Structures are given as structure tokens and as C-alpha cells.
Length: 173
Image 1 (cartoon, helix red, strand yellow):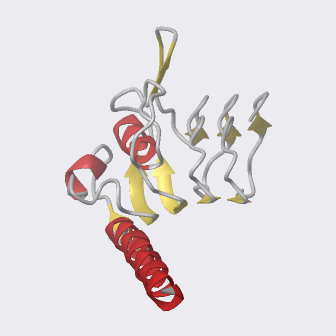
Image 2: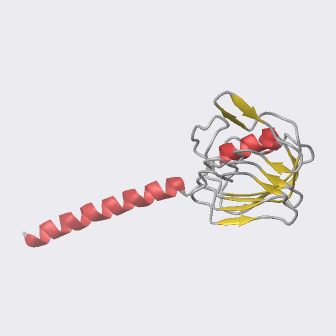
Image 3: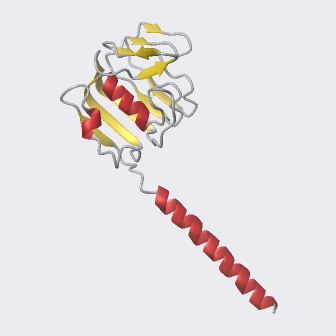
């Protein structure tokens, strides 16, 4: 009798383990290798990433000019919309070392009816606000300013690479 109970317990344990593994496998379709995207024109990042992959990319490198439309997409991929809602985004490593921030495009962030847009060579106010899934961020080489609260709420950020030439870092950044 004792052997039957042990076999039953063992089988229950095995089914539970297999169930956990299948849940892990369902989440394991993340794209973990670095995806490099060269933008020929600012504002085109949303056209370059398939919607089916948008929330699965964990490591992204962008080369070329980016504006508010692109930054809005990056925020979305990193877990936050432009209006501060959470997304299913899993982006954790972002390399912008070969990118250049330019003005134009959509607003990348909205707070209490105030819309924020990109400016040339500036990490704007609240640019990555509450993108807590970001763990590593390399900023563009040419930036000169980091706006207020640019990294506020980035609780997962353990590596931030700042270029030389920054002349201003805002409060709460």
C-alpha cells in the first residue's frame, strides 16, 4: 500500500514538474540574441519590427537617427506606453551607441496632458520613465543633455553607459 501511495505522489510530482516546464517553454520564445536595426530615416522603427516580435525582443541595438516615434516604440518594447500604461514588452538591453536623437515625430511621453517630444542630441524628460525591465542602456555618443526624470523608476537598470560631452543632467534623472 505504501508503495502505491509513493508512486501516486511521484506521478503527481512529475505532472506538476512537466506543467511548470511547459509554462517556461511558452515564455521561452523570447528573442534573446541581439537584434540590430539600421534606420535609414528617423521615425521608421515601428515599420521595421514585426508586431509578433515587438514584445519578444530582449536585446536591441539601433543604428541611425531616432525621433519621438522611435522612442515611443522603444518605451513600448521596454514595458511602458507613452501614457504610462504597462505593456508586455521584454526589452532589457538597449544599445543606442550608434544612434543619433533628432527632433520630430510623435510625442514619446504624455503626463497630465503635457506631451514630450525629442530634441536634437537630448535624452528628454522622462524618456525612459518607469521602464523597469531595462537592465542595460548605452546612450548615443553625441548627446549633450539628459532631461529631468529621464530614468525615474528604472529599478532594474544596473548598467548605464554615458558618453563624454554631456553638459547637463536634470533633476531626478
